[in-house]
Length: 477
Image 1 (tube, rainbow, N blue to C red):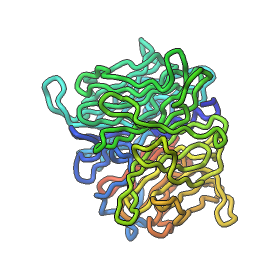
Image 2 (cartoon, one colour):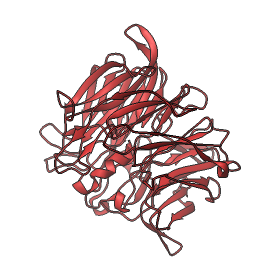
Image 3 (cartoon, rainbow, N blue to C red):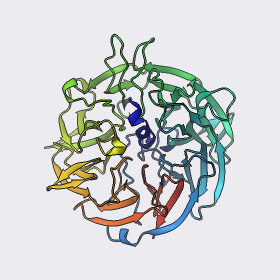
């Protein structure tokens, strides 16, 4: 990943807070949005939302805002909720817990800032979304928040690390070093499943590249159980700035990778990879053909698991967008066979924040796949960004929404969906769209004119999203 796209890593991870239960994420309580992309499959779909609908979306207003407290501004982590609390990370280096009803602070915990000369942006704090799980630590059952932090600013040991925090108080339960800072950074949002935490490792930018890794840790102790190296020892690159998607039935996980540096044998660079959860051994992978690559053509988007009907059969698929502007769908467990379909959603390029390619995760409600990205042309109109509904079986476009106003911009975060409504942040607006027709239902703008680079979440009748001025918004009826 080249310097021009360092900002894009902040957007993707897309980085996301995750709530989980002892088995997996996405089941922590009625209405709760418990992980980046809602569940371990990263579908981005909350089927439990009943308050916000196509009929009520037009009535959304700002209920409250909460602000960062530090000097470095920006929120790209996806807010998550559980038991009346919103958890969100910010570029000021803090993880925050906020009362979901009032917007008042419950607690905040400084986790660190990372800074490197020549990187853009030069300083970043918490850019990944956390995961909350209910489990026993130190003999006590509690809600635990897993989130990446650390850094080399205002810290003594300059390490990137994964934290386990008490979700009620913010107290540190354990922390595990995963690489020296500022070179090492966690854009990847952790996933929790069956007593283990899975998270990707990448560089802060290309200043310098580090060896990309997928790490599995014991959720109760923080001990590293095993790790998968994207490139061989002695090589760099192949960073994982996407978040792992878990197939809880098959016992496998999927992630996408960035570009490798020059080295002898690196088959997993600019690829989607499937590993076994038990030992992180390779099940399969697929790399973007050289003829389809763009300069600095990483996968920044998180893979999403979905299904498609084929006659009486239900096909199990995984989809992911690349910076070349193509969205690829694969049969699960058969990555090596290549994509079963692909659809262009944006003009390819190395700078998503400039309007090229796609780095945000798609979403699926079981009927359609919703994909967003940068510049494209729809019906002869030049669009700064777009959202497209695709047939999950063949990638055919069902409808498209073009963002062409001067205040519009590319969609950099992931797509979210609730029954009947698709949500994206684009430019300085949060846009709600009818999932069936593509009709815009509501457009809400930031108070400061700052862009929404993150991903919205919807929980118990409220929408949460942060902007790049450091404000977290709660929109409700």
